[in-house]
Length: 346
Image (tube, rainbow, N blue to C red; front, side):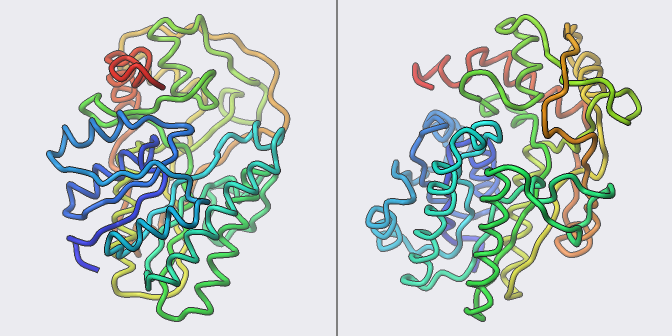
């Protein structure tokens, strides 16, 4: 696999996907994007093309469409896959588990069948720290026990197991499971960023929507956790750092086979109120908030042991929390309503 390789990026119009597509282009790869646009906007790819000067082959299909997917593999010489396409809301997964299992697992089967048919051996999987459940110790190493506690996390864990078993039966395959923690921020240009549909499920876009005036205040779920200020602690990672982690995994896979698992995070925990204060320092904006009851199932703290990614991939996060806040605000302030501001569609 050379740097001119064509890399199929499923879910490539989404938040993490679009940033990874941009990074692939900047590092000399040729991405081919598949996305059904159910939770993303093609505008993100239009802007990536503007930023890079590249033309990105794009196919609006569901990856569970085996025939449509096969036609893409037959039209392009695909050297590797980065797989983002999946439903991703924890709460929704509890309400609609069958839809999550059907989409997240079924789509993976379609991809693996095409890999077999077309001789593709390189696969980078978008996994999640949710596979650790409520970990006994922090920072959390890749060797920690896994115990997903909701259907979304279960689909990630099941996918890892499927990939492990299939790769073990195909000695020339190389698979990287990237367990990432809490992606935030946006490309420094402010042209692409996180554009959630409806009420954000994640902290940073909620903060930026309060800052831009589309929401009145931030709800902080619980302040009695055994943490330094009582609010939940998480490992926040800049989305550009995260994108670079995928390219580092692709590069590593050129010379090794088998299944490899890496945490992608900063290795530092920040509380909800830490993030609020960092945002206020970085932007000069005041974020009103109210403390409300903790959510069932939320854990007190989770942050990564990132030593394996540093030692094996030569990758580590470069951006700090205030830079994450700065870039998130740069995106939101320029795009108060997300991609709808310029495309007219969500």
